[in-house]
Image (tube, rainbow, N blue to C red; front, side):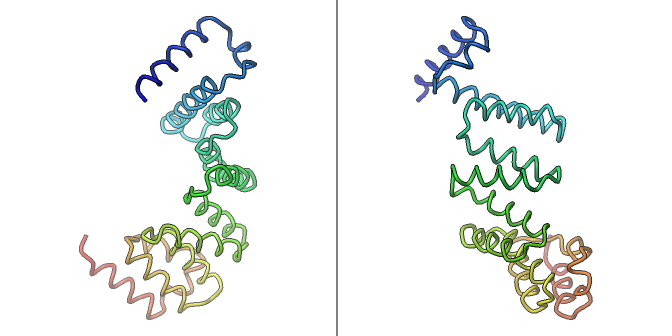
Length: 204
């Protein structure tokens, strides 16, 4: 594997030095395209880490996908960017592309659930959260999503039970959660107050 990577690196260096980028972009060379897509994606992630949600970082991801439209991780990263900037339709499109290319990318499923929930599409959100819980049962976020849906529907019993599942799996930001609109009317209920007490009683 190391020898193959060395050969690809040498080839990329030779092509880069020998031809302008405008010519290289028209050459159907899969290994070069895959390598360039990986490089641009890495630079995009570094860019967002340093600079935050900047258009220049997005352009790097878009360039990665120009080199390799079938790179699931670039679609996922772009979808995450759009999710964080509030562009739900673009986020869903990119996350769907990521899942089409890599069906086991469960983080994309979870984020789809978050988007549907924010849009009030509770049935679609529930479908995504249940899919995530089934695939990643140890992660509290799927149970937390389902608990919030139950709270929005006014189903106190299910909301508390699902929230308990989330806490059993490491969720600890209960006070922050109870400040959200869907939970405000439940925060003074005895069952929820018991959860708060159990959180305070848990060792750090």
